[in-house]
Length: 335
Image (tube, helix red, strand yellow):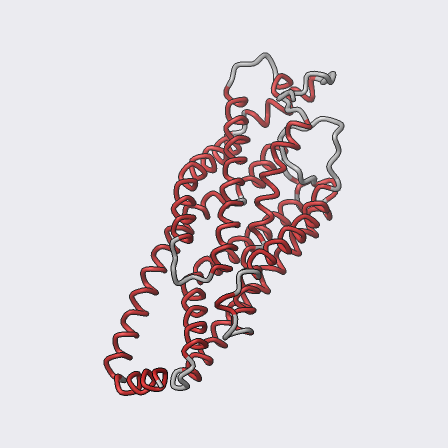
């Protein structure tokens, strides 16, 4: 598949437009920052993958969902690196005119497809985790042995995302001239705004669900503390532990995605007032996924250490102050 479109008869205006994009310092700076952040994010995502895989006190379904979405982030960063490095190379090579680096439409489609699919899958990670923890709270005593909820939720996530991606790609045409590999089109803005608005709704629902889950599980924890139901209590403690550990991921991801999608919709709405280089740089610049991939693994690692320390302190206090009750419960179990 050719990298550049050499079959069309371009006009001088096409060459000047492409030159203006290639020489834009704003766009070059954005691509350099995202490339560096992506290179930093890949080893940190590998660390997050291993961290999730080795969490013995994290439920299988929660692990499954996180690992799937971390894999999506890795795919997104790899696709981003391929595109950004190729674009930066084209911007800096010697050429007779801009028409020599106008990209081929089919090349752009296949380059951007894994980029967008992985990105849109990650948009729904928080709502999927919220649903999984809701189910864990609902079927409290039987959930510990469940291994089906995680894969089923991921299947649902893939189906919903496929629908959104289909709507997103509906206005794409494989004819004409394209100056930069990007799927969204300001000419048919609603095909971008509708999927983005649905994703924003998902983030809002995820935050509300997550906040309510923490409150519900804290009440359950208090109710089960003296009831002797160790199976139910363990599941509540495991849910609370997961919620407290994943709190930074929930809130930072939701806030980031809401801000990004709002800026994206605003940029699309005012695209007619922006030059092509500024429009492209703004669209790329507002997508902070590479920076999020650097920030989140470190934040989760810190939060996990903090939660571990708090749990150990609480356990030490409880064991030290109520040994008689634990001895009594053990005697009941031995009878």
